[in-house]
Image (cartoon, rainbow, N blue to C red; front, side, top):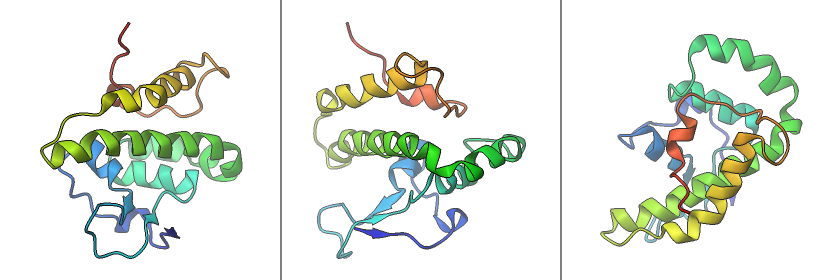
Length: 144
């Protein structure tokens, strides 16, 4: 795996939906790609935060308000970044087969979804430090 060295603003938003643009924050994992290695673009929580602003997930005011927190304590947010990346990979596993005309493998994502819900609700470790407008709408409802 290689790590992206560009800026958040240099990532093209071409997915047609924010969730697809989020999935596209990595490159080179699709079968048949010309890339020789997977390229991870979310290399730090600060970079994710910049990308969230670039993708209009947060407003300029929210970016300015939370910028000190996101950049001055970046290592403290590494567990959050790991969870964000795991959620992205879950979404990729769900959407890639759909793009190829296959069925939705949502069952494989249920564990990640439950963990994400637990963290975002504060059930495991207090209120989540990651709170983006519309973030919860990306998480499918749990089935009983």
